Length: 275
Image 1 (cartoon, rainbow, N blue to C red):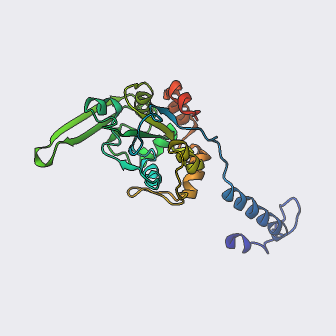
Image 2: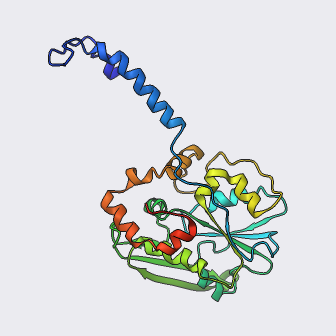
Image 3: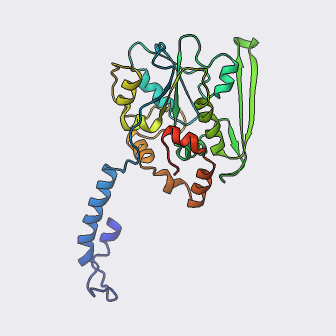
């Protein structure tokens, strides 16, 4: 505002009103401030809350819950909420691993445990992977740029642990999202609940009560991420629920390219539209 105020006494002979710049500034600036403040306080919400998608969840013990999900999908946030539910032990071992790999290792939902799988809108997830790619390497940001997912983990105790490798090539970054969540939707041999990160931002209490009847927890109001870039709770809501990432992080051709690769069946099952 200071930079504008210093021009208040400048004559504007070319202006339509033919007067001084200050004569319009005093009316325009307060109106802009009101509009900007209102927009910041009430960001648009482009989602409706959806109940969790469950398979074998209600009929099994939920006392041990394994948090699963792709990197940058909201697993830390979900864990911080579930840890507040009384009587529930939260496990994170191999939380980013693909379901068919977990199945091969007999670790999909070990023992009496169930898997809580977190999904995030594919384009919003892409922006997270750009900042913290973890085990994913892509040739460029183009929607059809090939990507390689390379995971190395240990199986077994101490120095005797065997190193296991996963090295898979995908035609584009959204194909990784398709494969992971499509894998869970097509998988009938494990017990899980699949929830959206956006629903936790909308109403985490309602989501947890749907998963754990009678659960009580404190509403999360802070970022849960302990590494990388963590947004505040308010900023995470505005960024994701208002799909602010569309204008801030993508060109329209990029949006069209990524959405063309997104699996329509997986999007529909999770209640997403693209963009």
